Image (cartoon, rainbow, N blue to C red; front, side, top):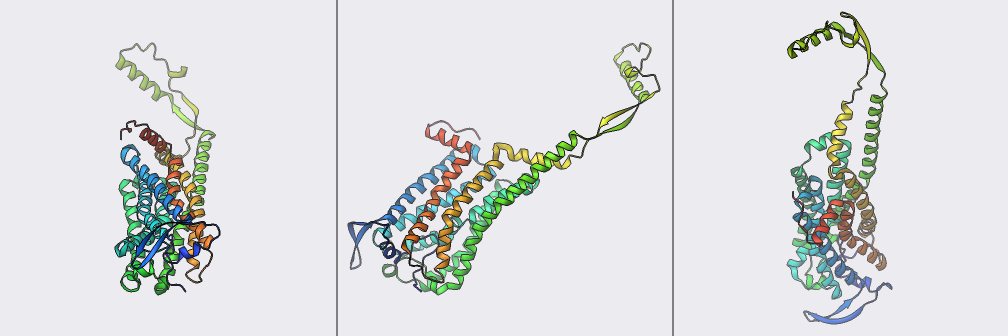
Length: 405
């Protein structure tokens, strides 16, 4: 097996360019050169380099602009939006580190010209950081689980979910992924990585094949959690709606129950009230024209037990603020669809090559392109799902003052 197997979501540094040059769908041309030791490297612009360049520019612009709008509009800082800010920040940092280095490397036929420290930063972005962003862990463990919590246990969500809770959840994902993925990168750096000038910048996965197989399992789990969350939220929301509707209908059509009213007590209270107000008694007429001392039997509506309904409505009212629940579900659906389209080919590809090499440069180019554009799609989907964010963007572009917090 080739020792230069790449990490999930990154190019096969050192060997992939030779594969992509064989793809009939890619047309390249030479323009300029660089010197790496005694070898003169020729710039080769092709589809891979263009994808890297476009991803870098669009990812920095899209994610960076939304991060600035969130910082500018303090009214947008809510517990749920903390997860969105964290996702945008991860995309921004990943694009800022990884794809410019990809662009430089592929521009010079896969050679690594940036040195060992830059390679360390690149592999950090390619493994721990890109795993949080590009395999669904950040989204699945924060956004998807948050929506499940809000729909399945709305009272608990209202009482316990806060900005502090959201920050702790984001920090837990960061720490957990780094604890799982960083040891492999560090071990490779200390014992297995060949000089980057001759072999390029990549993790030698052949030396840690068992560990890499375990990591691939974790990579698939994030996408699986995110996908399962959608039907769970849908059925929980449908169940709550039916429960609220049933309770309200029961209260509306409840049968009348008899109640006994002692008119003597009513007459005594009436006399006391008139005495306090100084009004004449006028023969002490009985209320409702009934004889003094009589007893009336009347029917009053039965009050249905709506404690569960009231509790649910309180939670629903909290979620309705800013239409957070429906917009959060819309965002979950949009990003789940886009993530499965963009991530599945890449996850399948890098899981398969752990056991058997795949010499299919066109498929590699397609899965890499889909994976790369996800960092830009995230910012677009978030903008489409939240009208308040679109309004804030409009104020930003038209140089209007932000809304007060």
